[in-house]
Amino acid sequence: MFDMDVESEAAQIHALAARLAACIDGEVEGAAADQALDEVLAASRQLDLLTCRLVERSDRTGFFQADGACSASAYMRLKSNERHGWASKRVLVGRAIADRLPFTAKVWESGGLGLDHAAVIDEASRWLDDDFLAAELDRILAEAAAGGATPRDLEVLADRTKADHAPAEAAAKARQRHRDQKVKASKTFDGMTRVDGWLDPEAGDLFGATLDFFTPAGASAEQVLADPSCFESIALRRALALVQMCRHAMAHATGCNGELAGREAIVVGIDYESLKSAVGMGSTSSAAGGSPLPAAAIRRMACDADVIPAVLGSESQVLDLGRRSRLASPSQRMAVVLRDGGCVFAGCDLPPSFCQVHHRDHWIDGGCTDQCNLDLLCLRHHHLCHEGGWRMSIGPDAQRTPYFHPPRGGRPLKGQRRPMIPSPRRT
Image: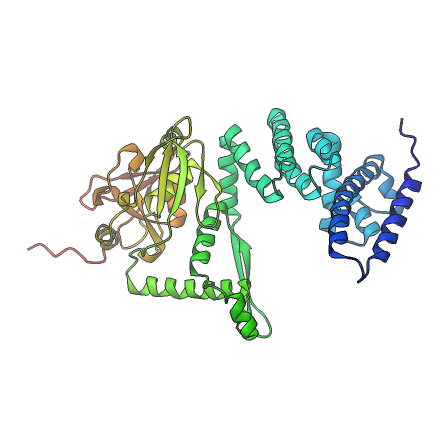
């Protein structure tokens, strides 16, 4: 039975913290501040845990309704005068550590993790139907946090753990992330353009690697000291990089008839069976970091992107490190562009500059990089043929008309080829 006077003890904590904050002034030495900061940070973690447990009690007992609040989050927001996200995080984490995160609660009590770690573990396990996997995530992630993992590290570890235990669900989540992508660009009243949005892991890795490649180096410390006006923040340099990327893209689209230019390589590690069956997960390694990706996405990327596949054995040894030579050569791509004229999917009219070269019979299945096995598909329809369950076949006619078979059966859709150079008329 809990017999501590919670209100009195909390009042003493408040008074002590207020007294300490008031005594910190310009005379406090840096070394003393550093030592005190370690203790205060440790105490703040315990106070966050205390806050989550107190709000959970108000939530579960229904006391939050005493002030007329319609929810525990609204009650917490009114009491703290903070934003909704600040309040709801503590409500959700309070429920989670009380109901289903015993390892997280124990490690938190020992000071091994903090509120943001717990929020990541809660989010990673909240919607899982598999109780065993949820318990494993609680243990694995809490132990990783105690070992020094950051909240971002826990997010990556959670994705990989769930992918290993439930590849079908991980692939479904990857498809949902692809559908949830969005980018917004809006003009402000003073003529600036605001850009924000969300990219899935695959697009994010590509964007990050490209942005890093185009970001100019900043001025050295000596240059800034000599001339402070030469300082450019990383945010400004990335904005300049994005503009440069757009200029390259426009020159590429208008000057080369869709022929691909050289790009930064991304290495993908995946085991042979997963790549062969298109079921399972791999992970990327690039200049921008890595992300777990479903095998079907890796098969698609390997058709027409600078992805170097590292096929792994059961003990993670590299069985084969692929090369870019499996991609269509510039002359092969030009021949396919001239033959197809753009995306060959039924009803799609996107030009070659928006398309990728698709291996109808994938190279991992023995398909060759010959013109007879290559077709132009835009990014959306390339996704459908690899991850959307659609199947492509070729008709017996001389034009080799493509047909696209829906994943649930039914009548196939007739695609088209739009030759950019018409065949000479026979006499």
